[in-house]
Image (tube, rainbow, N blue to C red):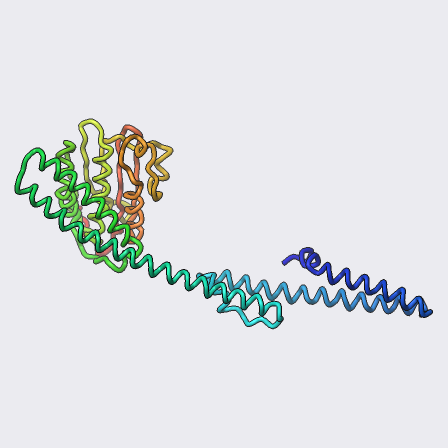
Length: 337
């Protein structure tokens, strides 16, 4: 609160005092009161009024400064009316009552929104689990009746499976801590499992796979990392170039195990690169006929942050893309030298 702004708010009271003083001067002059007595009276009046306005400014400023300090310290700002001291002035009591009523209404709306969101999330998760059954059944039918048509159908079913997994993991990504199990896993085994899961997709697009020096083990959640690898592989397939290939290798640097996934696809343009982890961002490649949603890398980034894993992407347009996953290395992580 600034003194100039405070005086502006007190302008009606100041004008009232000035008019009252003028009326007093006129009245006292009319009854033949000496001028020096009127002057002393006006001076005392002015000092009392000015002192009151100034002292009130000091207390109001301190009161609001304490409120702002309490607000700054709160993680949940909307709880300010619950922690602030009960006001003394009637005007402040009315504002406090209005604030509590607004806060109560807001809390009720938030609770209702959370309940509806939870119900919708549970429905989506249940629907995804239900739809996976016919997808698995169709895959089994295709495996038992192999032909060019069923192989193509298998590749499309893998895409459908990826999209359903994407929806499921998106629904669960806010609460990863409720659905993860950290254990020692082999990067080589996770890579081969991801490649096997995308087998038909890779075969249909004639993509070769290279796995080099990936015998390291790390501590992480195998299921969530598997989803991240699937997303990266799906992107590499979607944006593949001539004589396409995907490679995997592991390096150890700066106290971390780094899993590198690279391809020789169309790459990412320099202006798009800083924004690839933004939700819904498809970039130049996504606007050239590719069925991009802008969700895959956003989910990868979010899951990596939840799992304490770093992720970085290096790419040049027309020169392929390289994705790096950084696993923390400590006494509990064994690295094959």
